[in-house]
Image (tube, rainbow, N blue to C red; front, side):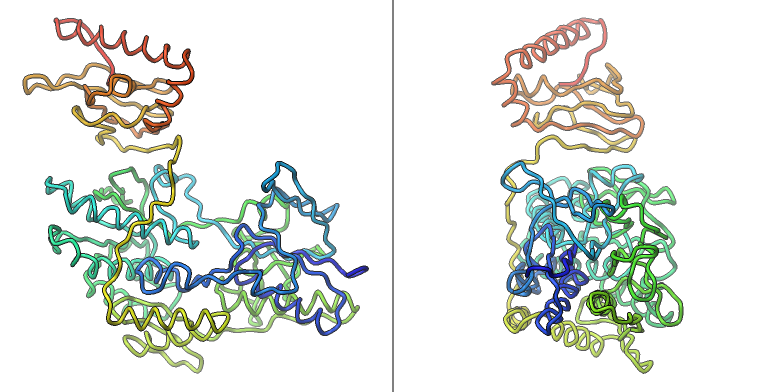
Length: 546
């Protein structure tokens, strides 16, 4: 549209999609507006139902709507955002199939990028905690849980099996409570397909820093009901505690307690989206400060909506970061952008909320509805399903979810693990003091380099364990078992909080096969360490692990 006002919307969640829809309608009504939307994915996810994806109550794609079907009159860019130049009024898009960047000019910019899960500053969380925020996260959690059940079903070591069957969730807000309840329901149903797993060994633990779950979101009475309902479902609710560290095999609480687990799901903490954070806009508590029109303070052509924005409600309080508020904010923003184009007065955001709902599993929920109506148990669960079903975009989506719900009432869950990723490449791992990186006799599956901390290497011969060396930052270990294709010849154990770079065996062997100098260096180290092993066995000195 020649001469039209260019509006660029960043983000494909509730705020971004409904802002684009609102702008489309105004354009159809005659407003000279050209709308572009930038999103990492080409679909919109109905996030309130993500926990049901984990539980298998709905299919993976039942909560997903293609953006191009929702937004028929919007130019859609499925790209990463490299940056935004507010002075030049351009959005810089990342490379797609070609390595070229692309600049997208705008007259008005709508920020609807939400926030991100931020594990920085918590030892082991970036490496070992599973976030729960997107569809990809939900699918990953479900796959991981099924993988754990498969491994636990053939594990003969009772203590190891108990650790495998312990599932820990951090955060007792809406997301944390709902994913905990959904996970618990799924495990109790799926366990029937794993007769070798004792049901009493299943443990689902919810760790929350407050005195009750949902205490910030709901009234004290409903929060108390939610806490007791989760406990009655068999979930261990640990209150007034938070997680302060994690490793591949444990989660550490603020009180010092260590939970042996291979599964840690965290819904906290969150921080501003990095793209928004770098714009230099006025922010408070990780959210962009806006006036009641949703316009960013001191910026005439920049608007912010949804979780990344701080918009005052009519009573002056900050608008809560919920989908219902994001949808109404998007409509206000769209209307005000059109008003700017016409030179008309702007309207103020005046939505106060339609209530709050949270599912608690076992066909129970809690609900605060308009008029002071409060529900708990099955009536609240029916209200939860009815309300969210009615809000699903499009008739086809409603039909898919309704069919999934009806099937879920009579059919068992499908514990199918989808192996969609061929390899992970180099990763990082965190270990707490006393935890073993590997044990003597384990298979050699990775090469390790120490990034921070310290570990000790020990060997057991004739029933006696002897410490043979200590390793620190910059040193590597584990190559002997990989090059020789034999089991580990020693045990490596953290003696201080330990961060490692982990290179899987397949990647290491590929490099060794194709880079002769790379292989020669490790082979020389392996020979030196093997000689040290022989000398030590003859009564001499230290070695390092294989």
